[in-house]
Image 1 (cartoon, one colour):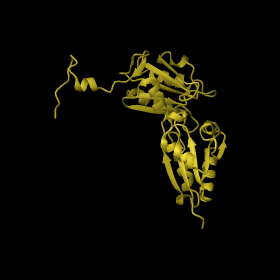
Image 2 (cartoon, rainbow, N blue to C red):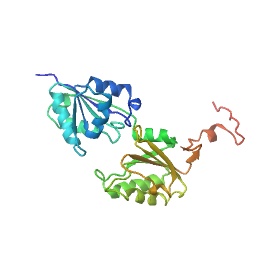
Image 3 (cartoon, rainbow, N blue to C red):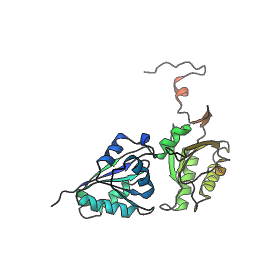
Length: 262
């Protein structure tokens, strides 16, 4: 019996080689076959031109995973790739599900390789908006009912979470972000600082700092990440900052360091 190969489920970050982890790059270099969404494959071809690729269009995630399992069972080392982090809206979950229900799939060594998720890269470009408790919510209703999405938006807004939206707007979903902002405005000032990071790590990379009232009028699409501050978020030196509370904990009202309780 031929020994099964392996599958590395890789998050390659926002899209630039500089933002890819050493582990992710090494796994792609060592792979016999790289499997992914065609847009992501075109990004990786620039960095790994010698690799062998298999790509499919959007919404073909199950097909890609089934193909990866088949090739791994033939003995190949397969890399299944997606942008950002493989375990945050990435391919890790569906890859493990497909392997589990495929004959011989549980004999495959499957390794999940993390990457820089969109929230991290967008937050870094905008400053430090994610310094306190944060809710990451996708506004795409392909997998989740819209009513459920908006319930989560309201719960996050009521709980004063910083809110990070993935998939904020598309050609078919022009008003979902607008509706989400109206829900958030029930709990937050219209002046709440917000940011938009688009095409992070790519040539078209842009960052916008605005407020909750003006946010829906900004140019936002599927390549954007939207971050909405909480009640403490501020704009400092042109950057979004959500204070963690260090000054309140360690300094008195005059800015002097408080004695160590220990």
